[in-house]
Length: 430
Figure 1 (cartoon, rainbow, N blue to C red):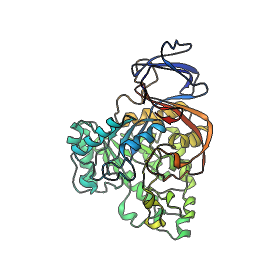
Figure 2: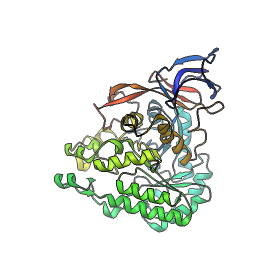
Figure 3: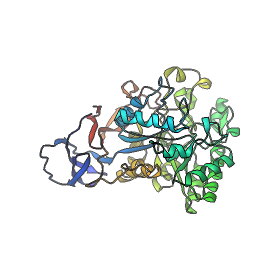
Figure 4: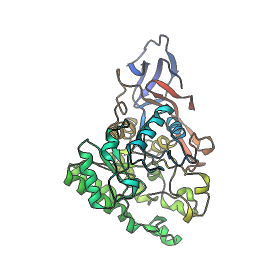
């Protein structure tokens, strides 16, 4: 990584008119036209889009315990390549991040990596087992300052435990991020329940398994007066429940993954385990509903659910394969393809859904800020013009389980700045 004063020349800030942006001492020093570079290095950004650094609410970095699939270092390098300056590291590690000691370990590893900020997510329950609340207060009071808690990978399916968790985090303005999956409705489930699962003879994963948990939890959050965030929302019905809860003024937020904005369960006909994910790929109707909900703000943000796996966990028969897809390095391109190029969002909207709102939900200071003088220089520069075929061989991530292999996607992150330090220059890590 390099540290120097930088003048970004002629970038379209949030997709608007061309502006120069001067970075000095880790902050935005000035925004205008015809700025004097002085001794700053100059980045010619003509035709490129300048966004606030992207923030991911849902990243699996796997460390500690599964360093064969990802580490904090490799995961944050992948994040930087994708334009992210902050990620929230999920708790389903080995050991589980359910104590102050483990979340502090992940936080320190993030600081050492230097490629993006890492904010640990604490487990809601001990060992993700759903039986006893984890050390929520201790994790919040730790050096990691945890504000988001999730048993992601498992649902907090006990209503009493969920209520207690919501009550506990209310004291310090925390949020419970729920993996909405009623386990009794998804036993042995392999893909979305519908016409394709019936034809293929694979056990179906009904939409109601997600929707019933969301309905319960928005009611609980309203009853307690606390904050609940819905992870990787995936169905049209879930959208309607969240829309209803927001119309009541309840403190409910939701995220959608890039892959649920683009891919459908029709791809499972190939039996390629790269398309096996939790929640499963849904129908075209669901995909269109998710796009509309992200556009109108019912869904607050895009979160990658970056879930790396070693080759042996994916290169096997469908039934035995692990669930999950990598997504940090392709997220912005998928959002450009599905939301910007379709006219559903402009670039200011992308900044809102991929930086401002996720930073606000996670209470992440210094990120998701306006591109204005005096603000931290956490920035992403994107050239929207190139189109590229996705080649996972060139990924910074340790894993290669992308559903976009060989698919042409638009856009390329050319530069990423973390508090003024260039972590990516010309599309390459530095």
